[in-house]
Each structure stands twice: as C-alpha cells, then as structure tokens.
Amino acid sequence: MQARGLGAVLVTHLPDVRYLCGFTGSNAALAVAPRRTALFTDGRYTGQAREETVGARVVIAKKSALGEACAWLSEAGVERVFFEGEHTTVAQLEAMRKAIPASRRRGFFQAAGDPLVSALRQVKDEDEIAHMRAAAALGVRLFEDVLEKIAPGVTEAAIAAELEYAARLAGAEGMSFETIVAAGRRSALPHGRATAARLPRRGFVTLDFGVILNGYCSDMTRTVHLGRATPQEREAYDAVLEAEQTAVNAARAGASCGDVDEAARGVLRDAGLAKHFTHSTGHGVGLEIHEAPRVGAGQKTRLEPGMVVTIEPGVYLPDAFGVRIEDTIVVRRGEAEILTPAPRGWIEL
Ligand code: ZN
Ligand code: ZN
Image (cartoon, rainbow, N blue to C red; front, side):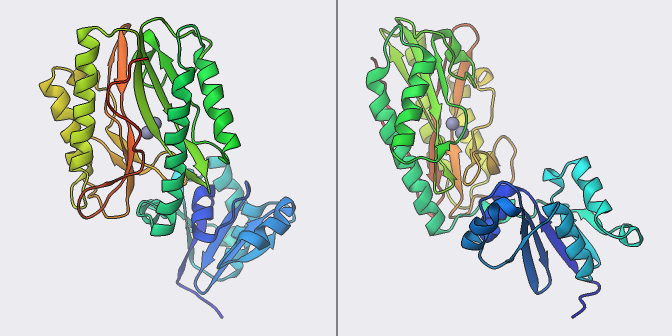
C-alpha cells in the first residue's frame, strides 16, 4: 500500500532505539513508517535483535544499517523523513542522502524541530521507576559500604575502584558516568574525577557516582568530612543541605523546573553563597545519565508525575573546598518519592 504524503521517523540515538523497541545493540536505525516499523542492525546482532526487539521487524543490513533503513523508507513511499537532528552528524546525513535515489533527495530528510523521543522518555512508567528504584538502592548500599574505606592517605582512585568493583559484584552493568571522588581542595571542582591524589587529614570528600541496572542509571552525591571542620565548612554544608531539602520539597507535579531551581538558589542566596553555586539544580535521569528535563534557572517545563530528576545543589569555593548533596527523586502528585535515601546529615570520619 502506498503512503504518499505521509511522514516517517528515523530514530538512530541508541537510548531512543532501546526505549522504543527494546534493542540494546551498539548499531541500530529504527525506521518508523505509517503502518510498519523496521529495526536495522548488523550481523553481530542477529540473535540478540530477534530476542530483544518488540514491535518492529528486524532487518540485518549487509553493509550499512543506517543506509538500508533510509533506502527502505524511500521505498515505503513516504514523502519525508524526520530524523533526530540533535543526534545526527553531518557525515551521517550525507550517508543518508546517498542511500536514496538522487531524484528523491530534495526535502526528503528533515531534522525534527522538537526532540522526537526525549519528550516521551522524560515521564517514566512504573516498570521503569522500579528499575530506577533498584539501581538507586544499590547506589545507596555502595555508598554506605565505601565509607569505611575513606581515610587519610588513601587515593581518590582507590575509593572509586572500591565502589566500582563492589558495583560490578552486585550486578551492575556498569557505572552511569566516570566516578567522582574529589577530596580536600579538589572538592571545589564540581566535576573532580577520581585521581591519584591522596585523601588529606582534614577536609571534604565528595563522592558522586551512579550504577546502571537493567539499562537505567542511578545518580547520587554525598559529601563527607575527614577530621575536624572549620565553622565556614560547617556553615556551607548546612546551607547546601537546606537548599537541597527545600528544592526536593518544591519538586512536585505542576511546579516548573525553574521554580525548583530557584528554591535551592534562594536558600544559598540567603546564606551569601549563591555566587558559588555554579551549575543547575538538577537534571532528568533514566536510560541516560543526563536527559530531559533540565532543572535550571528559568526553565519553564512543568514537572509531571513520573518524571525522575536529580536535585543537586552545591557550592564551590575555589582553592578551598566544595560541598554537593544530590538525590534522585520521582515526581509525584504530592511529595516526591526519594530514590536515594542515604544519610544526608553531617558525616565526620
Ligand atoms: Zn551525580
Ligand atoms: Zn547528577
């Protein structure tokens, strides 16, 4: 049957492919035409694709999965194909165009104006939330266990290694991102990846890490202190904790992401620390560690039940210290569900 005049969709961003049809391989193009859908991958995934894919015919490409998906769409008679502009390189677009007859190339491929799949992905169903709850619970357990390894003289990398080894043994498929262990002055780096630096006798240690379970990422941050704290360190910690709790409380269905950001920022402003809070309050999390919505200043997106976001205010005093506290929460109609209930109070080791 011809489907002239109708549009189709080409999905190539792997987390989007997985979300839509279940396939988890590393090479895929999902072609969605009116009334039929096909997943293109290569010979390495013949068995896996048939096993995992739901709702799409599996086609094993002889040469290029992307090229053959485009040829298939062209032959399906559709008038135009919307592709994921945010996730398509110039080279890929060139290959897509070359895969269809020259006479059809004009206007055939169009970058989708709005993100095609991320708007769907940002609201999780209860099955997805169950996966995320399990991933987050594992993260909490790992944090509690790694506390006893934190001591002056141990390297940041050793702490990260302990966390990651324990994560794997507990069934994690991997880490959500490069583990952050930032001690002493390095805690003032918001993204201080674990290095060979040794933990000092006194100072903060920030741990920010996540595990992947069933494809879903966890994300949490806790900041602990080695030795006696200065009053300034203690005040900063208390302010960040209050900012975090205030924002968690504000993160309810109907609130805008900007309102939630402002809830955290307002507390730090009152504490005279706003200029040291140099990033957004949080981000969506799911199949990817950073996804929609962004919980940042002025963001108009309204929170909906089922959105899973992080709340992670922090303050960073250059060459001195930094503090960040991060929870992952599920937006509900009333109070949010907290997926990462690890201790948030002052921990002195
Ligand atoms: Zn994090
Ligand atoms: Zn985060």
